[in-house]
Length: 274
Image (cartoon, rainbow, N blue to C red; front, side, top):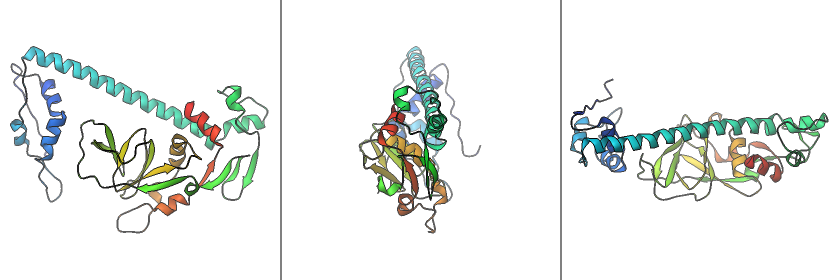
């Protein structure tokens, strides 16, 4: 395509995979940041600038050995990504079973042992439902409340620069992870909620993070498990919330006023450790 370039190497001098990993290095990514040219429609990067980047070129056999090791690491990273995706799907299915379809409560109400859980976990669930005006039938002893009673939404903060290469702190924007940096805005696991833009979403950061100013991040008040709250917030249709400004945006007050059914903390903790 017209927006792509092709680099060829002399196979007698250089391994193509070795050159690829040189270009994926943090040093080269930083170099690219100085070469991007602003355009009227899209930014562009002159491909002629690529050869000006100085690299160390070991003998060809060493290049191939290095590329093989890095390739194996890349394969391991991709495998871990796929495993994490599978675990995420399993956790979503379990959340739906426990907290949307209420399968353990239904089973106990019918005199059956809940499927797939031990007796200690099953004992955390009630055996009957009660009716609430806004949300209908919910398990007895669970509460109908709003997100504002359990979490505080904080504004993200602008970040001048961040990089694509892996670093110690993940950077989040409206649509999720967008890069890496060295400093953190939030030290603990948190939920990131898109604030501005056409495609806003709900994302989870398992560790320290920086959330830019197009998103919120969540500070919970100990009444909810942050991991449980993440899956519960995934049920919130953030993109349907629009403050009516020129740029589609999510209102903090609207999220805070959204109804949520909250189980007792031991049930949340059991989900988080399952």
